Length: 222
Length: 243
Image (cartoon, rainbow over all chains, first blue to last red; front, side):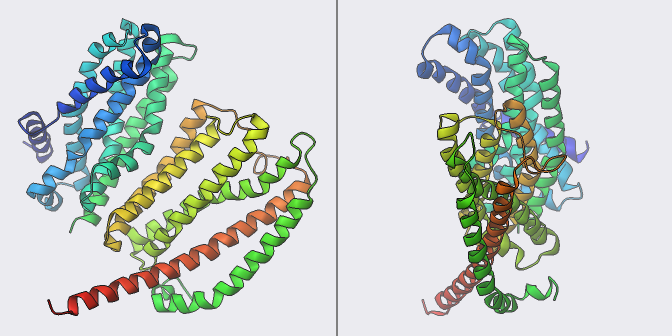
């Protein structure tokens, strides 16, 4: 098994077992969506109109919540130092870790979307549009969020600092994610334009994220 | 005199001590000229006297972006050349940039009240400047989260560079999201669309505010160097004292 596959396998295993906490993200997502009707009222029409925005915000916050552990756990038990010193390029190792994190924590959010869409009175088209945009957009959230996670671990600060640093960077993803969902539901724009820009953002962050995170780890760990 | 000569903080302090009074005087003079010219500029036929807010607003908005550029160059200095003063420059620039951004937002909002009938409008430019302000605050929060300045410097440098890549993307997304603000009227194809009566004071003010930034930045860098020396002396004293 190549080192990268080993990292991915190991991270997914850790995330899914006791103490991993990947599925807590889904629970958080569910809770945020359930809270929304209490804030805006049980009006089903209004909920259906706000649905894509609520789902996107919930997914954004849920993925932010789990990012904290992306490097922190490895830093605590010392395996991060081994990864930094190993012969595998650190950029690739970071990309593998982010991919594993997305598989363990991001994918369950997308799987949960249809159920949450029912709660928000979204029809089948709307739900599948939101799920598709989340599938294209959440990698961007994970890969840009990874930069914040790497900075946080080198500074021994997590939580709020990570959120403050990462959230402004995720604004483009939020804009195009919600815009593509809305376009698929009500028009007048075509779905293709915002959706392809969303994919472009994901691809760009796939490149920028690992390099910035690796640079941060290299310069920051001592 | 090259950048490497300036790497010695003592030499930098000596040089800036000589330059700063002149810079401050030039800034004050140009600001005075610019303010008098702005006050004497004719009222706009549509906007009335509120057009004069522009003479403060536009230089602040330009500088809000320029300062991030300065910080990005300083970030490269920290990461690539390990220039000892680069992180001092980056750290000193962040609060100044945040202040310019804040002033651009406030003056814009004061202008928007009589013109658009509202203090705040979620239009593309306002929104992207607000996001820029948030990013400045995040960067300052990062600087303030860590005690060791060199460790904070490397983290802040990476965040600054990621921000420099992301700010144009955010700007583009927000433009796409919504646009209501008037299009650019100074830097555009075919020369400025603005009357000379407004253009001249605006350019004077732009130069004056840029000089103000340089003055404040150098002064803040001096303070930061002195602050680090005080910190080092305090740590030395604390470690020298018997337990």
